Image 1 (spheres, one colour):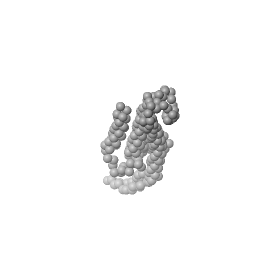
Image 2: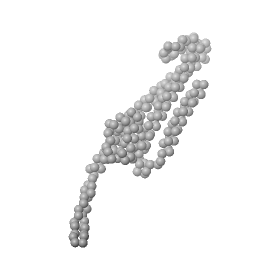
Image 3: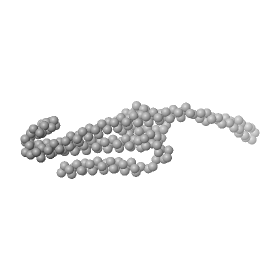
Image 4: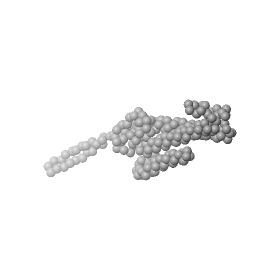
Length: 217
């Protein structure tokens, strides 16, 4: 039964990741000018193109929810990638912890049935000393060690994935801040590059001639 439940959890995880990838691939193709948005995050929204973005705000947004700051700057593809990665990592943490707890329940039950161990209230460290218990057979003791190690490995891998989640938040925050800084620099360059373009001409009417001048910037 636990094997079936485990397969069900992993099936749900794979379905979630597959659905996210399908949703990502089903988006309409971006214009040619936005092909570089995959990582650099070219701004492609009107809201992000006419005003400066807060660099600190962009960092905090993506450090909280990966992709949030990228979306605010207008980098849709980068926002989606960071967010989907975060969801997939959290699903991994949940899967490893569920599997680890199932294995923990199994080896505790095995110890109670085949080594006369009083399980309630015992810490995880207590079950490391299984070699000194009164096992009814060496086979059951070896099976207990195998299941306990599987549980321990699952929890360790879950901790590694949590570290990856933290790294994803930090990297996403730094990337969003970089995008905001680059966006602001482009706005400043555009403002400094504005120039006056004089236009001179002559307009004539029936009884008069006018000299006109116009400046555009």
